[in-house]
Length: 130
Image (cartoon, rainbow, N blue to C red; front, side, top):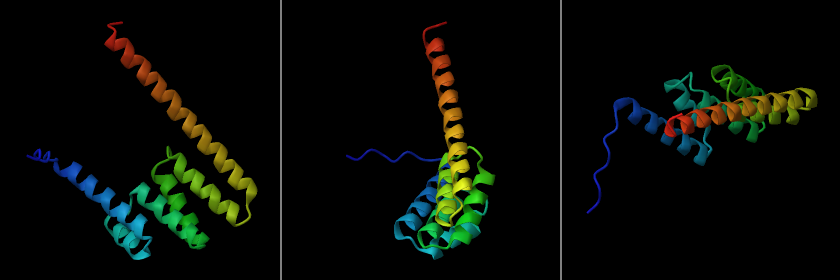
């Protein structure tokens, strides 16, 4: 007997469908799929990031830069968008900007690491009754 599938709330279901559609576009590497998603979700940072990576892979650096910068504007706490953007700048020969973006990505990662460490520390204190 298979367990019944857990019923998702509408927002959770939409998020799952979005992720599945993005995974399909990434797997197939079809511009058309990315652009269809973009018409539905124009402010989705992860979509802009992956579309930027796609354009970088096909050497369309102008579009890659545009979408990766948009991803960074939509989610300033994404080190992956910054690192992908640094690769684009490296490919177009702007080494200094590429290095600055890598440093910025490392700073974002460090902030995440500290925030997660502090959060875990507080959770352990609560669990221990302190």
